[in-house]
Length: 130
Image 1 (cartoon, rainbow, N blue to C red):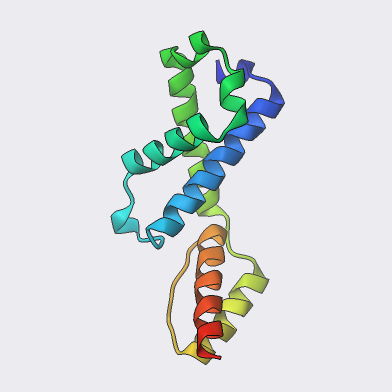
Image 2: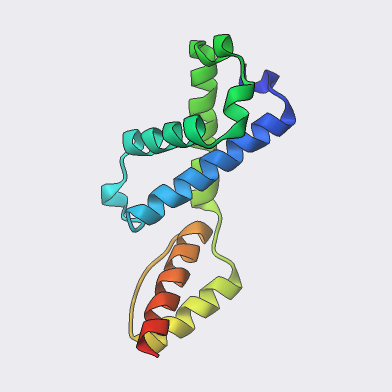
């Protein structure tokens, strides 16, 4: 059923998963021990029902189909896996390393999205110390 959606709607769904996942992970400080798939799904559900324009364009009978929910769950897993497996850029690594040396910190990060979070965190700390 997911595959029957228009490319624009599928793209919007992917963006909403990505944005919500990255925001959820930032909210928990990218702490894997605090990660709870149910909490993330609740965040995503709230986002799609209150902010996502694509949600209203899907017919209600499709939204109630178990197969549609299975397809969405699979898509969520694929998007999360893609996010977690995308390595940080060389520029991110260099910027983070420079700031960590100046701030004497040893934060770790495993993917590009987490590096964005760490870089912003370090930038905030660095600006506060200036």
